[in-house]
Amino acid sequence: MAIPKREKDKEYWAEYMKRRGFVTPRIDASKTSIRDLRAFCNALFPFNPRKAELAEAIFREMSRLRASKVELYRDLAPKIIKEKRCSARTLSQTWKALLRSGLLHRARRNEPARLSDIFSNRLEMMANYWREVMKAIEEGEL
Image 1 (cartoon, helix red, strand yellow):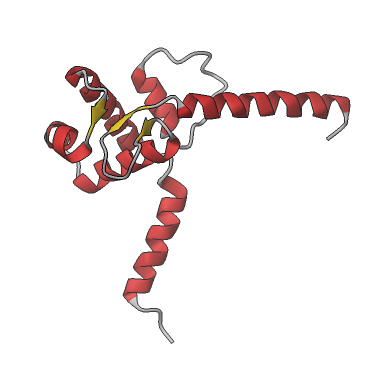
Image 2 (cartoon, helix red, strand yellow; image 1 turned 30 degrees about the vertical axis):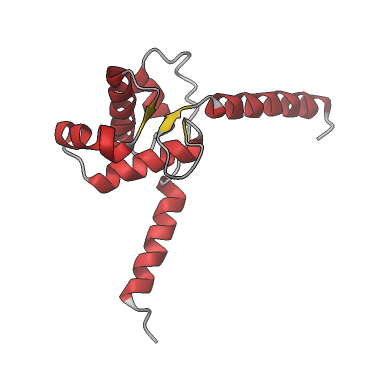
């Protein structure tokens, strides 16, 4: 029995979002520091340069507006879509990835998003964990 097209589409998008729907920071040994926002966004979206470009545009537009809280479709989307010539879907996926990663935060579902320090806290927690694991491996206690 053949799988209906609708089911194939659901499976495809579920797999796609599993692979590309999240911020996945890549640690590059050749880079010793992050000098600008572009390099930071490229580290966040190493597999998708288009989303890295849109994330940079979102942060720059927030800075230009000097806004502590913004909504995607009311404040940012019209200008970014026109300027970067991207689809609303790609911009929305980038926005959602930034929300899931903790770079942007909303108190409730329909409230405007704001910059958050959750992401830095998560990275620091992972760094501390990795330091402890490295000690355990060197001592042979893992």
